[in-house]
Each structure stands twice: as structure tokens, then as C-alpha cells.
Length: 608
Image (cartoon, rainbow, N blue to C red; front, side, top):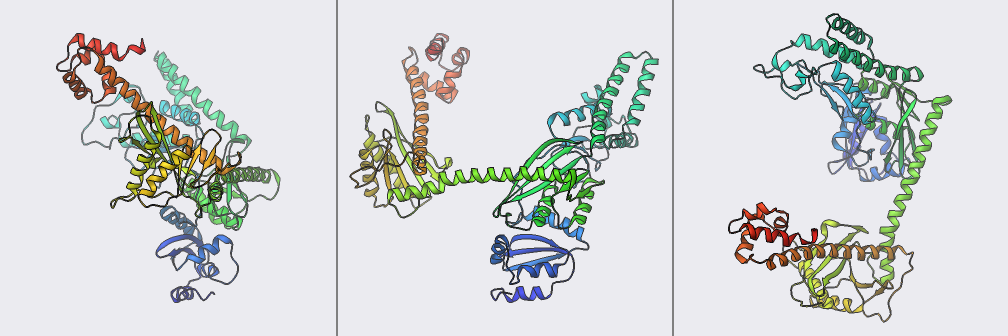
């Protein structure tokens, strides 16, 4: 054991029991990892031994300064406990599924006196009964539609039984509810129907068909032909639904096929959802930092997380497993029925695993390629930019500035922010030019940069200083920006980017810098410049639109200052005035019908 481990850890290791349970690795009280073990003594000691570890385990051990254990009666109990602890604490070094999609289940709330039939996206430990999952909207809609026509269970959220009978809703009138809220059915009678629904969802449909056929015959004898036709259609729906399920089941049972691909750094799990021999869907789940861990450990960790809120298929076909028997027992509890965990070595099922593995390898390769592109566009681009500009620190926060105006009118400036090469849109800002008259972009840039730098010097909530500033323009714009910086005694690297030749102008440099057109650094600063331009132009157009409407408002005969104030008070904004109709305009105090019509016509001239 390494000498660096504390006496407290050594003492805990000496007292570890030879029993199943969970262990919690900690750093300064924070839980870093949760694991389970058949023998806590052997498993936990292995972390603190001198034997070589994988990169992930070594990184974990280097941080651990304490650990706790929780004893369990059986290995199955330890597995359930591990799953619950991971879900509760979300430790950094445990497997995290990079996927949040939840498929629908049919839920029957057996924890209520009058159970409801609803659709749920998660399986909860709440005493309800779940059936599914159903893959696709069409599948869940088809099943629930048949159920609600044949089994009139309630779907409302009323708390029953009610203190006094309530008036039944339209579902009762449509024959889709027995109205327990109104006292039209006893709890015993209602539960008979609930049990029939459960049996139906478990595949016992023949008693339901027999009941419907008997009711149809009775309706025919009583000359209730519309009712008989409805029952006939219900029988057809049930038989159609069951024929689909039976046809699938005669080919093959439902299967989940799982494989994991590893590349030494990360891993990718792939699940094939096979229902009745037909592959309905495949899903990939990224497993960061699991690329060099033992495959059977990664697989078991993935399976416990994957099935935490899912019901497994009848067969779970996996590439590997460290503790198949315990996993199988746990999945049977989740399904409330038979589940076989199969680790095939040959044959058709092995070919299914190989198919899943091929998909996982392909997904991992694509993810790595995408990550490499992002890395090149951000981190590598920033490093290359620092080298091209001759600055020592690789810029993390880059700010870009641009001026927008129309012949000097409505001048605005935009500030965009990129952090680690990615837009940080919450940090974007607009500036209205206040001290410059006419179309003077140089002086406007000086004003904006002065105001921006002063924000960084505020004692309360200062803006963070950037690592680099991009000025949209040539050496003149850059010179005025540098004057703003130097006047406040700051030292922030800056450069100008001229759009025509994509020339980079640096302070005190005689010649511009020209980057290769394929350079990631050039692509990065182009994205910053283009985003600053887009952000400024969008805001400027909005201001021009408002000003145009305001000007037209002032030019309308009969709309003086008093009426303008009344209109703005009534409609809150220029846009509100423009969207109002003639009647609404005429209803404003001080307005007349002719004035309202003249105003409406003036504001909508371009629409005619």
C-alpha cells in the first residue's frame, strides 16, 4: 500500500468485512464513486494496493481521502443499493448515460382505491403496475385506444372515493368510464375490471373476446344493432392487436441486445430493441472515461443504469457480465416476470451481439470524429491564433466589436463574446452611440471600447476583462480602440480584421498578417467577426423599424403631442399602436374616428 494514504484509511481497511455491500469513495466529503462487491474486504483493498490500475481507477484513487461502506444481506441487495446510490448522488466516476429519452409505458395506479389508466414516461417505485415500453407514438396510441374502448377505467386525477357523489363527466356519457366519482360502481366491481385489464395486457385476451361476443349476441337479440356494431368493432380491434403480438411472438421473444465498444479513452454502448424478431430501434449511449476499464464491469455498470427506469425485455442478450445471476434476479424484479440474461458465445444470438458491437464501434468513431472537429475549431484554433498574434496566453474569452449605422443615424455597436471558441450568447451586449454625431465609425469605436473598459473597472459587479479583442475594421478602427484601452491604463491584446482580404492588423505592426484560408485560427476569428456583424445589424434594423413608425406617427395630420402620449399610454409601445385596429385607436381618450382612420392608413401604407 502506498505511504500517502492516511492512517484513517488504513484503519478502515483493516476492519473491512468479508461480506457483500456497497462502498463509497470520497474526497473532502464528496462522493466520487459508488461500487458494489460480493466481498467488500477484497474489492475495496484492491483500490489501495500497489498493483497497476487503469487510467480511470488511478485518477480516482489519487483523489480519494476517505471511503464508507454499506453492508447488504445479499449480492442482489447490494446491486439494488448501488443503483439507488448512483441515482441519488450521481458520482463523477460512475457511468453516466448521455441520453435522456424515455419511452412510454401504460400505467395502472394500483395504489389507489379506484385505479387509473394513464401513460407514463418513467417507471417509478410507487405501487403502480407498468406495461411496456412501447416504441413509437403509433404503438402506444393503438393500445390505449383499444383499452379505453373496451375497459372503461377512469383517467381523471380526482381523489376517490369522494366525500359526496360528483356529477360524472363526458367520459361516462361516451361509455369510457364507469363513473366511480358519482358512486355508479362499487370498488369491488371496479377492481374486477382492473384485473381484467392487467390480464389482457399480459396476453390473456380470450376471456375478453368471449365476454364481448356474448354482449354482442345479447345486443342483437334485444335489437340494439348500434351497440352490437360497436361491440363487433371492439372485437375486431382486440383480435387485430393480439394477432400482431401473437405473430411476433411465434417468431421470437422480445429481446434487448447490448454491446459496448471501447477505444482506450471512452466507450459507447449500443442497444438493439428487438420485439418479436423485428428490430424496432437502436440507441447509442456515450460512456466517457470508460474506454480502458474491464469490459464486464463497464457492461454491468451500464445495465444497472440503463434499466433503472426501464422494464427489460424477456431476453437480455449482453456481450459480457461480471455477475450474470445477480443481474438476472434484479431484472426479474424490475419486470415482475421472467427475464433471461444471456451471454452468447456462438450462434444467432452471438451474431446479434456482433451486430450491436459493430454499431457501437461506428457510433464511437463518429463521436470521436465530431469531437476532433470541435477541438480543432476551438482549442487548437485558439492556440494557433495566440501564436499568429504573438501573445503569450491562449485566449479563452474573445470579444468582438462592430459598429452599425445608416448615414450616421441610429448608430449602435455590438459586442459578442466567445469562450473557449464557442459563442456565449448570454454575454452579448448592445451599445447606443451617445457622444458621436454623424457617420464616424472611428470615434464610435472609441466611445464603445471606453464604456466597455470602464465596466471592467466598476467596484460592484464588474464585467470580466477579455483575453483578446477583435475590432471589425482596419488600422484606423484599431487605433481608436487602442486609444480607449490606453486611456484607462489597461493591457488587453487587440487586433483589427479587415473584411476585404481578411487582413489582421496588429498594434505597431507595419504589415498585416495573412493567415492561410484553411487555418482554424482564421475560421475562428471570422466566426467572431460575422457574429458581431449579425448581432449589430439585427439590432439596428429593429431600431430603424421603430424609428420609422415613430416618424410616421409624428407626420400624421391631427396627431399632436397630446394624442401621441395618450396612444403610447394606451398601447404601451409603437408596435402596439401599429397592431391596433381603427376601433381600438378611436377608443383612446382624445382620439376621434377620422384621426384614428388617418393614423391607421398612415401606419399601414406599405401593406396595401
